[in-house]
Length: 268
Picture 1 (tube, one colour):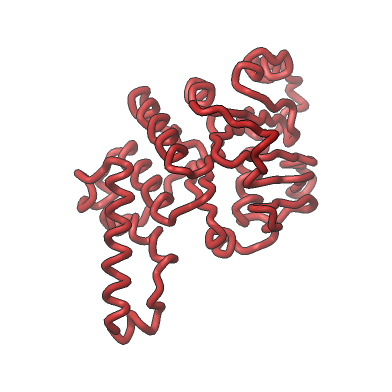
Picture 2: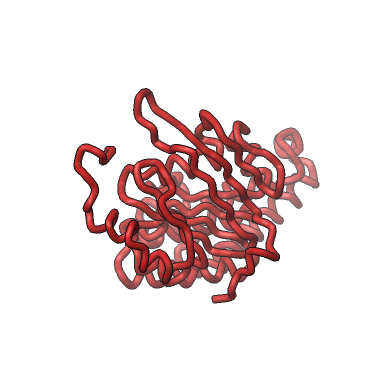
């Protein structure tokens, strides 16, 4: 795993003082983090820690009550998800969101279509440029499928695929959009040990391709095995940040994961 020199690498993503409440529930409170370019950064914490809320604020699914998010040194908080995706941020979800009734290749092609050049009217009028554009998109979708290693299921309908293959299709779709930053929301959820190990190898392969990865994950063996840096959340606050070995030695992190938090303090 290549080391990341934070002092010499400007963060590709910087979140500063992010807060978000839902009624009287403080889902995220004054959370800041930097994501160095070229790293795999993990975000961990118990259920209700604010991890998915953090991802939703970064990807534009939610707007923060306060705080800023800068990508490539430009503020993106409050932008629509489509605009944020166009900046070069792609995302997968804890609950797989594929188009059933479509093949794996067709699902991946959806992720590539935002980069097409011919436009709606070019396609509607069947202009030559639209045909060239469609062939280019199809070629790149196939490249993404080959990169992830699921060519054997490319023409199969996703509803008939195993859970592990569906995860891989979602990952290929995210990669097809040529992201600069990839947000992975629990990529190992529902996977067995072999599939989880394969997922770890894929995430490393994606990072080695030049894509920075920010990952929320509950599987500690995966997180500790592939992450360069980890942020730990609990009850909407950041309680620790550091390299995997430092996280494992932190008394506060151990206390939280051993469940030694008062029941009345825990949030759903």
